Image (cartoon, rainbow, N blue to C red; front, side, top):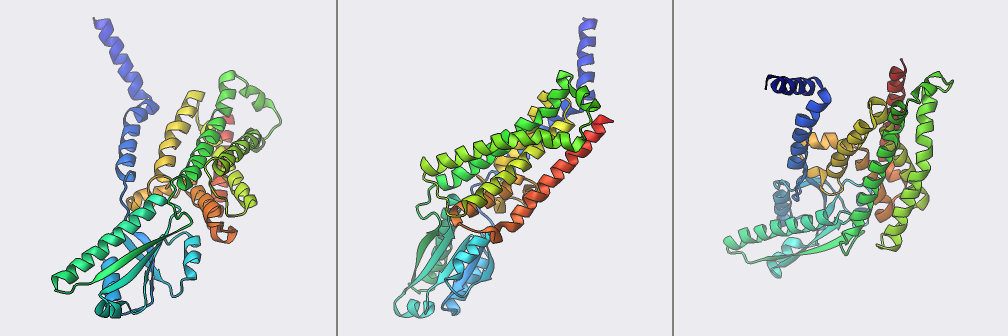
Length: 367
């Protein structure tokens, strides 16, 4: 019995000495509950909207003030022409525009009816529907307050959806799934490349070869670029011909951005490979360390704006977030590089950072 107790004590010592085991036991559950608790929500908050007020009278100002006091919306700016709406949507910040008809207050007095139009960016169908519902609820509350003051009026809320008028979920599904597949598959393929050399004992060949560390890193990434490009083309082909996903923008730009994202994901996989001691560790990091953040913090399923500020800040280091913005803008909005150059530069910066850090870590391993 003493031997058995001693054996159990030894196992406890092994676990507590192994920092990775402790991280898996305690760190991963804490990280997962925080991610799921804060990221998973069907509500929307602080959605950036614009106002187009053709009337600019007392009643429209009352409704605008009511919207300002709501936690659901944040009035980003006021526009003066309906022609500017699509340009605002292409910039990617504004999600909806509320349009007050001319003579809004006058129509309420004389006809007892006025019209408010909600124009929504429907590239995210669930968000667009929620915005329309929240707007309707705010107007109903406004009408109820008027009714309590013996003023029987009616504000008709009309909804119009840009880019996805039928609110097809596949328009959100295809770009999101493409991002997840390219991110996870590319990262997993390269995450085991250097660790495989270590486990097979062929690392010594690389150590004594005249190949420099940056050549090894680029050489590991290069073959997988073509395989991942084939994956991307297959996904785009199926999305277009099977699911009817439109490609309104430049196909060349779409392929360029896809290749850039693939290289970014492959570089991240190489970085994981350089800091891992075994293929098993590398696979665990690429799967568990990337899958949840990519799904929850990329904006694919849950709106990032509705998350707490710390989660929003963390989402900025997820390459998938920027690629989803890019691919939706190209495929659905048909934008050119002038609208997505910031996101493109961020992906380029991340790629350079991952490759540079991989080379640095590889040098340390060689020493």
